[in-house]
Image (cartoon, rainbow, N blue to C red; front, side, top):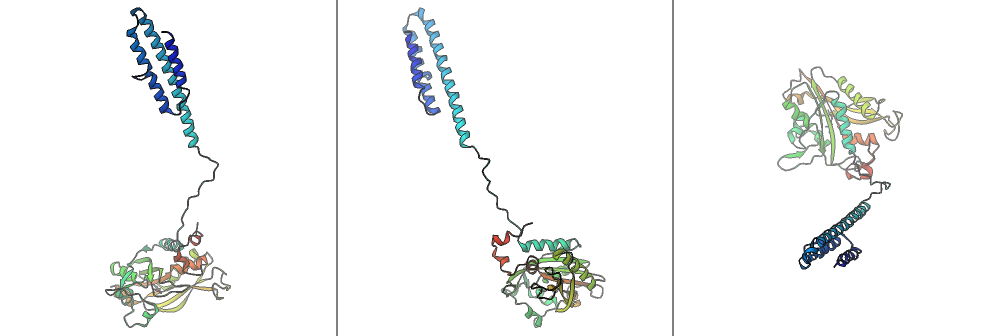
Length: 340
Ligand code: DAH
């Protein structure tokens, strides 16, 4: 009877020689320790042996059970360690491998220049006001002293939409919208998209303008030039100067064209400034008294100046971009060059 224990232990040794995973090990364990396993069968044998031998037989089964349990516990632990090691090896990271660089976008040059301009003028106390892109004839032209038969309308080829509306051709329309609601003192900056039926290397049917308007008592052309000097220095460099040339806009009187000294040659003359040393950057003037009247502001009490510039034009001059199309094609090889 005694060698039954040795036999079982031998079976255990054979059974555990080959198992591939924890499931197979568990199955092997159940064959000995499970409810229908080898040990249960041995316990049942107790009834068959003489009563006086039963205690020592029972002790032997218990000892065997402990031995088998210990054996499987050791194997389970061994397997757990092995599986853990395999898992860690599978998840290992090669820290010497070069990482994948995240793609970082940049601000569009038009957005950059727009932000710079807002920065310059906000520092002088201007507030940003944005008018609608779809306008009426009244705000875009008539109230700006450009009635229906006015020849200046031909300066801007207008896109008309249904219902008597049009796509604004100039952010100047925002001047009227603001002055109808706000009375002087006014210091407004109005950035936005404008639309004209125009298309070549320096003109696009959609582009951006930045409008400025100041209305208060005793405002003069000198105030305009002082602010524009500061603008020129901040955008084109500290040595920049401005000059005003007489011009014509229906909504300003007098009207001026503003040139900035060429930042590429410092004013000596180069291809960028076509040898003149100066570059035209914006239109401006003293607000026409008719425009103030149209908005219910007394032109004998208040005066003002206004200016309007093309943001694409400023960006092209500042960054040396020769074709406006580059600004709408969204080629990342082009856009990626504008990083801080
Ligand atoms: N609105 C003009 C244009 O689109 C630019 C302009 C000129 C705006 C003179 C002004 C101004 O406010 O005073 O060409």
